[in-house]
Length: 518
Ligand code: ME8
Image (tube, rainbow, N blue to C red; front, side, top):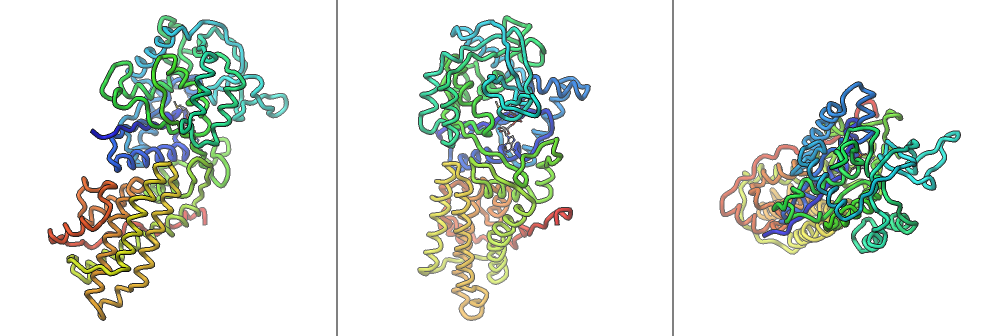
């Protein structure tokens, strides 16, 4: 039985259409899911939309719609984005789903049974944009005498009867958890959370009575749950909680909750406390990635600079966008995108280097060898090249991807591509065609083996293009895992089968800037 691996993204608020930040998170999670599948793990991957709460209710009111209509319409755009970007999730969860209401009420009852819920009155600050309560001491000054949340969003004074969760009871356990190595990554996010807990945790208001767009509190039907209680529960709904299902037994606790840096508090303090209260194990790791900025600024509707990820994928190609985002941004830090950066990066690495290498090699084999392959005697330089490629593809890239250091892993890969291009220049197979045709065959076939390994290794990042190349190379779909890197065995099989290398279709066209950006 293969080892299980459960990965989730945050579930997005569908109060508008998806933006590049949503695409970034979905793509990164997909790269991890595909990478772990390719390592042979039994992967479960969940993403979806977070549809309850005041933010959704107010947006619907503004648009003269019911919250459900707004949620149905907008959630569809998020699902469509995942499909368009080749995000291979096993479940796209919506918090309006029936099984999710059931799971949320079940965890509520478990927290109540633990004696951790009590009825009281909430008086304090609330940010609808963040769907978060803030302490007076956390607020910052805005314009005039306006107060803002630490995220810079407006806050409003709220007075309501509310259920409270005994968060304060879990201080010591949470500190221990936050300080345990690996739970919260990158480590830089840890200090802030530890400081937050150390300064003392107040009990948390976990229900609302002033609106009804949410999951009803069991036994207290005039209350709906605070949206984060139900939102976080999505991670276990998707495994069948509260039933003792096979999915649940196999995949909980989650291996990785992948989220953005702005919602680390909810995932590393509130969520583990809810789980501890309900007597459930806590996730193994939470990773808070950075933000993707446009020319150094966060995209926002008020700045009028929101990019639709669909437009970028249509214009540049899905794999080009995926490659750029994973390659350009050091995972965990903030990163910038611009049209120029996409064009420069993708042209240099995918079009001119990897694409050109594959295109040239396959067409030379097709043209000069009629596409047929034969056994050859490898020389020292051929063996050295294959060793460089093997190390990069089987060891270095997987080692870095395992740490979620995607840009470093891809850097190791592209260095192996450069080594191949240098080998082509040095061996000059086009010149050997006349002087030493046997040597030309050896060189081209060495390159073919290298391309096989390079294509397998990079598949999680550019699944469509790498997959098409592996199709051209006659690699069966069940032989594309990291274990199959080392083109030699595959090559010998192709020779034995009399495989013919087809005329390649250009896979990585050179990108151009959009006209308005020139
Ligand atoms: O926070 N760059 O939803 P959301 C990178 N519903 N990531 C970004 C980003 C950017 N510019 N902007 C946002 C919510 N994100 C809650 C989550 S989970 C139980 C509930 C990330 O639609 C953000 O950090 O505001 C979060 O991880 C995800 O996109 C969804 O954000």
